[in-house]
Length: 433
Image (cartoon, rainbow, N blue to C red; front, side):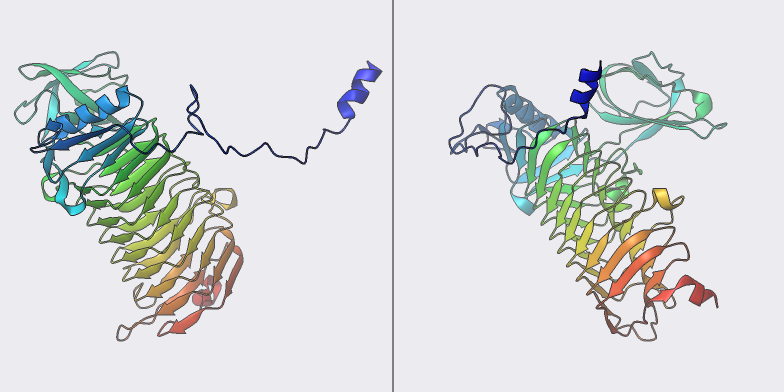
């Protein structure tokens, strides 16, 4: 026994060498990390005419995605045209989606909502609607209910797969109760592009239109022009995501997501929503405008980069909060924000706040109302560096402070600020006096 104890106390062996770099990659069964760079890969074209697959709605795009996925991946090229969606296009691992920019437009059809006519229990895989007009087999739907006693909300996304009158079969069982006493409803609401538990996908050069004027709201925890859940290594570039009655692009518990050179505008809620638990997002060189918040770091978003973005005419430019730590916000232009250019949310105390974030070399122009704060650091936020930023205000009579340092914050470092028409940083206790 004594000898065993001595062995357990010995220091671990330390190796200085690293494994050799792969210089001649081969396609090896099961290896998805190191692969050759093939000159030509499987590509299927989709178009309103003159394409491998011809059509004008989500079904033809989905057929192409599923076909390419069947053979291990490749690209679906969506040719110029307008495609009207009654359900999401469900992305698959290794299948890239590309269009022809503003010439390839995917638009959501108008939503329809009706109450449920018959209660459905958690083990059911069907619903009966009060009014079935406007619903078709193949439609994507959102089922919602609210327990009036507890306030608990149920939100489920499903597809209608069979029908008898107003009675519809669902693609998946409910696993939740949908009762009339909880105001259960069914709406034709869904993301335009949806990725669930997928990896290694690029989405390029598409125009996605949520048809906001003709749709009800579905928030970014469930939808958006693009919605990702539990995904890895997704690259979104050259995409326009506009007019969604919810978020523009939302990703939840999804890691190493890159969004660059995109235009995200006129969405009701958040332009970009790096969602709960998402690690290492890269948000670069986008234009984000006319939404409620430009970039919303949700819960536990860490080691992210927001660089070179133009964020304008939103209520809040960037919002950081619940355990969003160790992020870098650098070189952005944030202007015309109605409330704050950058907000650190108050949260529930020191262990919940967004610590160790750096705010460097950004330009803040014409943000916040008179008497407000361009950067508002609230709650028990700690270890924030605000360095070498430019603050200017060209509005007549405007007098916002560059930074407010909240009363419970600590170790907030501000240096190198250039102020034109903006008041210096101020501590909350000084404002109170």
